[in-house]
Image 1 (cartoon, one colour):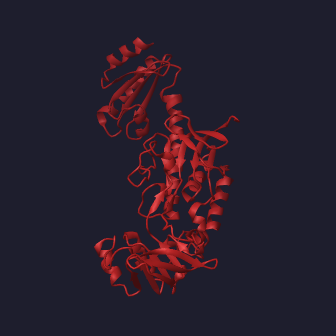
Image 2 (tube, helix red, strand yellow):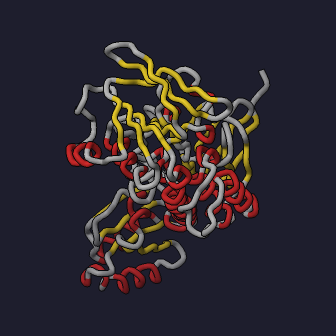
Image 3 (cartoon, helix red, strand yellow):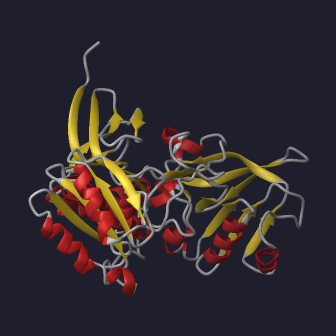
Length: 411
């Protein structure tokens, strides 16, 4: 078996949808050596949307494919590399994180996960022939205007299905809703249910599920099956909207990263996962609105935070825990007068030991992430380490005699 080639990067981004491409633009512009891995199509699900009219900066609208081509072009302008291959395995709990593909092992200081997700589909006959731009849609916000004065079908009765159906009623002339439950029963909240049942444009087909999708190149008929009688009913429509759930593409990260019950990756507002240097953005996160614009926002945050992580890691290694001299670190708070007032004394101690001791001062607020690397969030506090960068003491004792005695013992 051929030995896999190892290639090093600053940042590896898994997934080339709007979130991943945006993260790539930010990382590339920051002059980080950046790789984007994509197993299918650059641009992700966005490329299947024919008309996008709600993305800022395009008053005449654009297609998903054209927009994503612009994203990729901009990323390439900033030197981002692209590899159309599938990530087979990852190792994210180490300093030099690894992403393994069929042919290579890519290593990086940070990894950004932007693998997106996929809508849950019905599994009915011929469904794969009409997905996305051929008649089956999963986004009312994206495709409502294109269905003005048309007849559409909505599959599902949860909150998303009913709320999106009511949104569609502002454009379409008729909305046919397929519900698997008995008449009057839905999975949505009561307010949405009441509003939908009173909407004159919405016609409900109770106790039904999709048996097949039909058309000649483009969907024009949905065949519904009555779950009680078994009777089939062919209904002519212009577009079918499926709202029966969403599945994040996070299988690769199970038992590695924290997820919620629906398998979405859990992050904070900085897009940080539970592992240092690993970020997640876009539809891999559970969020209220899954749109290109929200994915772009996530990607921008992830890109900026990845850059900060790398910069702070280098600062931590080369300055905070430098290996040229014995060191001590003083943690203080700029808004706490007593700890702030000790700064001159710390600088005097460094001057006294100028040839053998290196002082670093950290504001616990401004340098929060650096303090987290030291496992310290209290102030005032002193940390002592040897010339080899090994921490030997963390102390709340900030008295000058104690500090001098400790430094002398380490020199």
